[in-house]
Structure formats: C-alpha cells, structure tokens
Image 1 (spheres, rainbow, N blue to C red):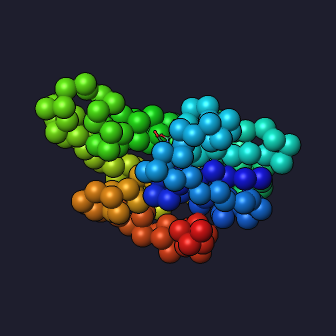
Image 2 (tube, rainbow, N blue to C red; image 1 turned 45 degrees about the vertical axis):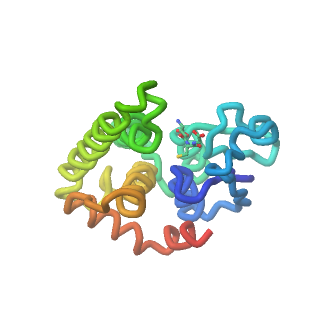
Length: 201
Ligand SMILES: N[C@@H](CCC(=O)N[C@@H](CS)C(=O)NCC(=O)O)C(=O)O
C-alpha cells in the first residue's frame, strides 16, 4: 500500500495508525505548500486534491480520514482499534467525526484558510478567531471525556489518532494551550513507540 501524506497535516493520524497496526506501507510525501496536491499527477490519484489518500495494492484509492482509519482498523480486527460492540463502535465513530468534521474542517480550516470562509479580506481575523473558538471548544469536550480514562473510548482506538493530530496542531502550529486532560493524552501518545516512529517518517 502507499499512503500519500504531508508533513504536519491530518495524515499524521493515519501514519500513527499504520505504525500502531504494523501495516507495511510506503509513504509518499506531498508538498502541500508547493501546491503538489493541485497537479494533474496528484489529482489523478485523489481528484479532491487532499491528503490523506491511501492506495491499496490492487490500485483502489481510499480517501477521507474516517474511511481510511476504519479500513486500516478492519484489516487487523484483533487489535480492536474500531470496537466490535455496537455502543463502543458508535462512541469511536462519534469522536472521529467530531474531530474531523467540526474541529478540523470547521475550526482549524478557518484558522489556516480564512479566505475559504469569507471573500472579504478585512474579515479574515474574525474568521480566524471563530475558528480558534470552535477548535478550543472541541478540546474542552474531549477534556471532560478524558477526566476518568486514558483514551477517548477507554482503550486506544482510531479516535485517539484523530484527537492526536488535532492536539499536535495545537502544540506545534498554534499556541500550544491544551486543557489538562488533553495535554496528558497528547503526552501519553507521544510516549508510544508507534507514534514516535510515525513522527520520524
Ligand atoms: N475531509 C478530508 C480532509 C482532508 C484535508 O483537509 N487535508 C488537508 C491537509 S490536513 C489537505 O490536503 N489540504 C490541501 C488543500 O486543501 O489544498 C479528510 O477527512 O481526509
């Protein structure tokens, strides 16, 4: 398999899962600041012009973070990164969706791409502020959930890899202020050998 990945992007969470699961996968780096995602070569792989994109050995391409993460987890069901019991499954998908659809797409995207949310340049600062509010309120929710458990759904799951990439952005691309339990979760993940291998790649 091949993962199309960009340094410092949400595909870091997918790389964490690949390392956690011990899946043999080549990593190809996509130069997002240089606009490689808009080249005909990359658009032939993912017409959405986004990472992550995973190419299976038979050439089928899987896009969208939740779909790729679920696919990888399903390859190694014994690891239970996507629980088999209905409520556990719902809790994990609920958390993944919230990170990807709300914190990332509605919050972080406003901070880094304000022009996609308002055509008026003079409103960019307000859009960024709103993005930061959305992003932070997501951490507040997870902070409450993490009060009595080490991982989002009790044991390590794809939801932790999703929350981790958002935490990584807060620490490495924004002001680093994570609420206490999210900060402990971030450090817990940074201590995992698989996460360190993912960051090295
Ligand atoms: N909904 C997509 C979002 C993917 C996404 O926004 N990826 C960003 C990097 S974090 C990207 O490729 N941006 C390139 C661009 O928008 O030009 C998913 O879940 O995978």
